[in-house]
Image (cartoon, rainbow, N blue to C red):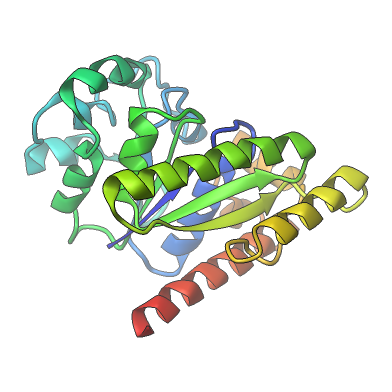
Length: 260
């Protein structure tokens, strides 16, 4: 099982769009995919027309018990309506985790839960809150690959600097190498800001950036409005084409590491 976390300490950079797009494309390839929403705002949960404010079982249950039984883990999984694509939704109760985490030391809760699901899924994609705290730390501890969407605008560069400091901190504290890929998003070639920001990203993070970019595409918004995976809603859109190229790049990286 491969575990990818999608994180950035700045909101509005396309994390949920990236999670849903990649999850849908992996499922179309025949992979069994678990989408795990660790963001108390529940953007990914809302995407699939579930209400984080009124949901009975959710990712919060991963933290509520010392260890969930196999049946309990099964009960918090939701069918998204798309073949081979399963969701563990978020609930507003996740917002209470930060208070408890300091006392209870819950940094490995997600990793332990996913270990129980190792044979059930081929990929897990974790959507995280845009805040450094116990939920993001759990995602980083559980993942083998971190994807960092970065909007191609100046303020996003500052958010990326904070994220890089977080990656270094987690690497030191957990004594593990965290593979990460920066993904330029919301690129608009008509604007000077997008062009100059993309150039800066490529100059400053040459070793860890995806060489291409995700363009601005209104079809993402349309797909979300219809609770549909982008590649199902409009498989020929330029945004979907970009995510297909990204997935090909990520899988190629994965295969290269396996051969190394």
